[in-house]
Each structure stands twice: as C-alpha cells, then as structure tokens.
Amino acid sequence: MKLGVLFSGGKDSVFACRRAMEKNQVACLITMVSKNPDSYMFHTPNVRRTDLQAKAMGIPLLTWPTCGIKETELADLAAAIAAAREIYGIKGIVTGAIESVYQAARVQRICRDLDLWCFNPLWQTNQIDYLRRLLKEGFSIIISGIYAYPFDASWLGAELTEERIQRLEWLQQKYRINPSGEGGELETYVLDGPLFQKRIEIMKASQSYANYRGQFVIEEMQLVGKTGKAIGPEMDRKIPYEGQNRTEMMHKSLCILLVDLCFEKDSLSQYEFVHPIRDTLQKLGYLCNILHYTKVKPQDLANHDKIILCGTGLLDNVYAGHLEFFSWIKDFKKPILGICAGMQVISAVYGGSIVPNQAIGLEEIEVVGGSSLLGEPRQIEGYHLHNYAGTLPEGFLPLAGRIDAVEAFRHAAHPTYGVIFHPEVRNRWILERFANL
Image (cartoon, rainbow, N blue to C red):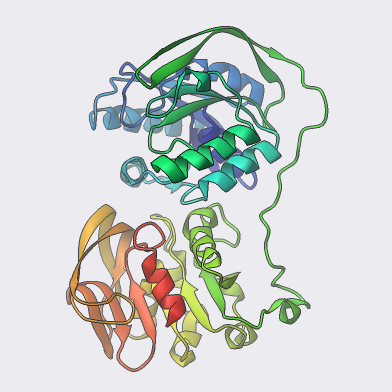
C-alpha cells in the first residue's frame, strides 16, 4: 500500500515512517508549516528543516502552509493530504500519535472524509520503553523545544541519551509529564537513524529560553557520510506460537488469546489495535498470544482461558465478509470480549446485524446494567473509532447505551461480552476486570 507520513522531523514521525516502511511503500512525507508557533496540531521547532531529512531518507517531501489556528488548521491539513493523494497516489496516512486523542481523532476524521486509511503505529506504546528502543536502534535525536515546568535551558539542543531518559522517567513520576513529549512538554529533531542514507551535521544554531519555554533553532546544517553499518530493525519479541512448539510455549498460568481482526496478518494496524491490549494485559501479569482470525484452530481455543476479539481501522471491515471463521464463538463457553469490530462479529454470529454507525473520539457512555465487566450504572467516557456497530442479538442483555444504539452487551447465559468503544485507550480497568472474571 502506498502511504504518506505526516512528518515533523521529530522522533515520533520518523519512527512511525520506519514502521510503515517495514511492509508498505512510503510514497511521500507531508510537512505542515505553521505560521503559529503555538499550533494545537503541529510541531513547529525546525519544521522548515525537514527537507534535509527527506533527502537523507530519499523520500519525496510535500510541504504545506497552515494558519495554525485551532480547528481552522484542520482544513489546511485536509488540503495537504488531498494534494498528496493526487500527486503521489497514496492510499493511506501514517501518524506518530502516541496518546493524543485530540490529534489522532482529527486526523482519523480527515482520512475518513477522504476515503483514506489511517495508521498510528505508535499508539498507546509505553513511552519510556519507546525512548530506549530509539537509542537501541541507532537514532540520533536532539531536544529542539521545551514548553513546560520543570524543563530548563540545559535541555535545549541536548542529545537524547540513556541518562536523559532516566531523568525523564523521574520527571514522569514526580510531575506526571509525558516523557516522550506527547502532552506538548518537549519537541525533538532527528539527525540520524536506520532510515537515513546520510546523517545531518549541525553547523550553526541558536536558542531562546524564558519561563520554562524555549527553542533550539538550527540555522545551518549539512548532510555528511555515515560510518559503520546501520542498525537493522529489531523485531518485536513475540511468542513463537504458530508451529510445532506451540504447546511447549503455553504457560501454566492464565493465558489469553488476542484475535487479530485486521485485514491481513501482521498488518500495520496490529500496532494500533492489538499490541496496546497485549501490553496492558502483560503489565498486569497475564500471558498473551496473538493469532489472526483466519488462523484460529480448535486446539488454540482449548489452550486458552479467555479470548479477546480486537478492533480494526475505520476502512477495515473485511472480517464482516468472513464470518465463517468465527463459528466457534457460540461453542466457546469460557470468557470472550469483543472490542469494536469484535463486538460486531459477536452480534452477527448470534443473529444480530452489523449496521452503519460512525463515531470518532471521546464520547459519554451511559452504563445501564450492573455487571462484572462495567460495574454499576453510571456515566463513563470512552474512545470511539468505528464506522459500524452491532445490534443487540436475541439472548443478550444491554450493559451500556440504548437498545437501538447499544454500546456494550453480554450474553444472558455465557460470559460473552462486547463493547463498541476501545478500553485500551480509555478505561483500561475494563481489560483488567475481564482478565479477572
């Protein structure tokens, strides 16, 4: 698939580009140049310097001006993405969003309106682990902007090192900052990395700082040759579940199977819709395995204590045309949780329908029935990302929402649950409750 990467020159957009290139073609980089240094949507320090990074990576760059005014700047972004589609033939957009629902939801809406895929391969990743991975894979990164207490001028132009990461980890614990800068605390600029054919050398720079706000401004730089062999991509540590040794890998403790509903096995979407669930459960001490829905066998069902059917991207409803792969759901009497697309599948298998229902972003959810999964009736806020929903099948009880717009349900006799929102983004306690059923 041809993809365009929203590119600021910072670590997140560069690493997202790297992930996109593992199995897809990055046709262009898209840089938004804001007139407003305090843009809500866009990175601004040294954003005019992405041209040299694009040359270093050998990828075409499309730069686009924006007013930088809150919400109004979204029209500029939509125009830039539409131009990239016209010029480079892209089918989707990649972002470096990690936790910002504000930014991710707005890009998702633009892509939906333009009928483009949207991928967020860093979504919900552990920020400290991610920073250390950047170092391990050979990225050279400097701090180009700081915008919050307690960052002082010593951070400006400083290289990201293990010592800096340890300091960020401490600041996260003490002041609740986002160590990767996802909350706007800091910005970065990448000088080198595995994607770079040449590295960037800064020849002249200046900085400004006052009241815990400052920028490191690159004035002159050049491309220079690289010495040594570039570090190759480190594959995510996965349990070798498929093959002859799968039984040997099963742990005696609780083991949860995550069923990937994405359009293809090991797609870029898996980083966004499956890995965050796995990481949350593993942090709680549970063993997880991941299998694409086309690969689930009877032995896999027998070897697991619980199953979670994961969500997919907005344009991805391929699973709905292959319900024959999910006939096992009715016979599986151990706990099942369907998330978004997974809820739709459960509904359809039990005789319900998958119907158009668009929602993107945070919305209030009315919990209407007491349950072990959602607790007592009350209001919660949930992250929605779907074009379709599942109706309430016969034999199921509503747990949240209205009968004609059910947000969560459960089977009356079996521990089979569905939620249309994404608890891995907001309300991770739901995943813990499910694991503890």
